[in-house]
Length: 105
Ligand SMILES: [Zn+2]
Image (tube, rainbow, N blue to C red; front, top):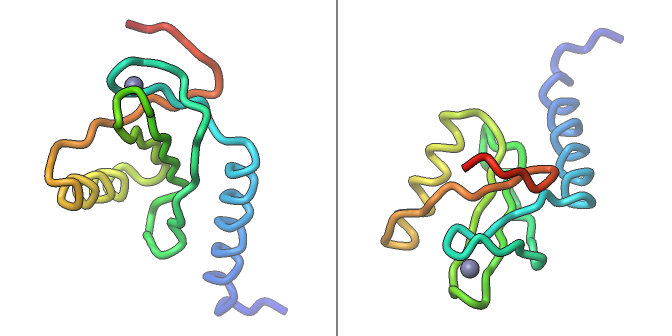
């Protein structure tokens, strides 16, 4: 008992459990362009991304745009978006992901 070495492993397990639960209950994502609610939400594999808890992307067929919703450490999320922008060659907007639709603008 009391094996400190296992700490990383149990954190990985917790992270995996959070991912599984989140994948089973994806958030509501609205298109960054037309604000339509997107239903084809896919979870990205973030197991190799330190600090990223979960990442979803949803594609809007009308705009031909992907909207991302990422949760995790602020610095890690910023780095994730920077990598996305580099890959896309253009600015990537933070998506809107909320448990319930909510008008605040
Ligand atoms: Zn759209």
